Image 1 (tube, helix red, strand yellow):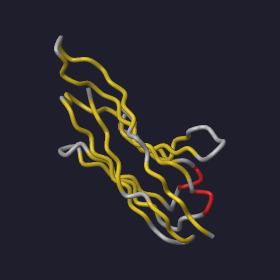
Image 2 (cartoon, one colour):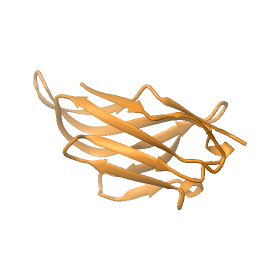
Image 3 (cartoon, helix red, strand yellow):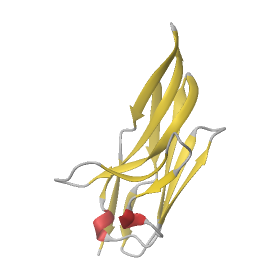
Length: 123
């Protein structure tokens, strides 16, 4: 199917910046939606920022003005530039992609998650 590999997490002080990257690989036919989610301890996974299948860019209210998502369709990558980080941004960040891949029996749909990358913001 389609695999997602994330990179760029780490430990940063409040007010600092980090950039997360995600690369999709496999027999990709097309990617319709791609973005970032996060899950803090004891909380549900939530949307951070994503490009929707309809072409819109969606951000969580809590990150608007601080985070910027970008995408390279030719390379099947999506990045998340995070600035003015807060301790509340501490979480495991997951890349997500939805689309179609070329399988043995033709084109099939997929929805894949990356393995997650830890972002820790200290106060």
